[in-house]
Length: 297
Image (cartoon, rainbow, N blue to C red):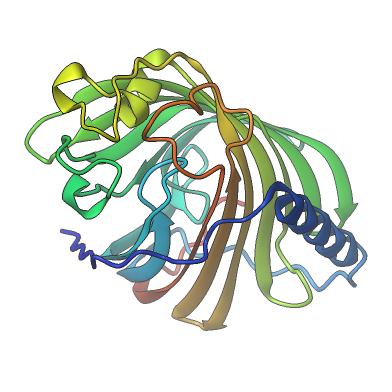
């Protein structure tokens, strides 16, 4: 079972201008270019077929897309990795099945999720229903469009996922999200460090937009008017993920994201409070047991 704790602490100074977002994009792709020409290291052996251990992490995360408040989130849970030819649970996803995999094309079905939010901890949503845990499931097509070095490549990723919310006692459908992305990946970036740098555009159906931005008449206040969202563009995301194996049974990871909601379809919602937000987090994985058999690359 996982445990989660939240502090009522707003992340001040997280708002960025559009110019800073463009500067961050430029700097990130300069980093990409430098890594593309780093010397290729010797091929590492395949990782264990399965591992068991403990994973934990923490980070500052926006309460919801375009929120002007972020909170410190904690997460600790048992860790399980399985690297089969078809079924995978590894660094790329909690659980996924690879239906097609060639040198340059991969089609899988994967899962992802996000934290729950107590609306009383958010000024814009105070008095409204809480935002439950969100889970996403659906197919993802990944096409390699360039290879920069032996361990580096640039992919086009096309994930289409159905979204569900849960308060752990129920399950509700919340629409569909589509997030086309360009991602640079390097398994040996200046040594035994894996990185992924990607930029994505995020689109959502009316059901998903309503979950974040709808204000029903019963929740109207002097500073919060009624609002009915539309399907469309949610925003863009610049993401940098890095992980490094420190010891045979210890891996650390870092994650940073900048979200730009300029031009979003529902930017006139009273719950739409900040056009640029950011999140940052770190964590570790302790492998307590791993198999002698090696997984599929």
